[in-house]
Length: 279
Image 1 (cartoon, rainbow, N blue to C red):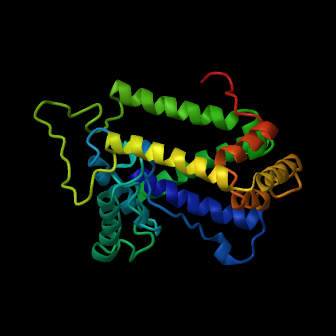
Image 2: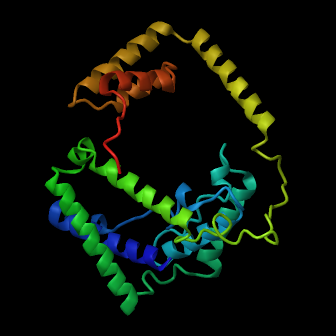
Image 3: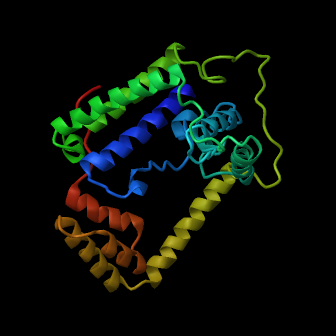
């Protein structure tokens, strides 16, 4: 959690510097780094094993975010890795946890309570230096788009994910309930539910069949000529780098073109992602 706090502090410094020196922003409001969401948030920080542990992880992320003046969002809800969206209970617990951090613990009353701490300042400096090295690497590759085209971004993400998983499987990185504290005396604690469980296998099948029927009905009732014309406009915009693809995509949606049909157009124009070498 301390590293997450340092990371956000470094990001705030770097954002302000980039906006002022690289982009020439004159309005101080543009120098402010506004991170939306908690620290340590995302699917990668959750586990399907003992899912209620995810709430504790998300609360720590919300605390870290509050300690750097960000929104103390407690996310994702604890049942994130179970699929099919979030239960009402999980959403309520996440929202109330964020409220407790802000209104009861009052951790947002001070924007940067770690300012002046030797450890926090040195850790922030270290992360900022490492981040500038990455930016310099991107610059040397011709920018972010060029770096993606050369596979640098993909390789770094894959390398990081591989290293993370390797540490978990070796036990170097402890994940409670996943690779440690797995004895027979350990309990898989669950909550009592006020609403039906959203992950029932039968409900999954029923939802899929219902969606298929809805899709068939939409395709029967829509104007196929309008759909075809809209998809042609999407393709024309995708092929022209000077065009904004969003307006024709919106028109295609209004004509009831499906997400798959719109994506097919982009696949035709841009192709599909191909991996770059090995890790």
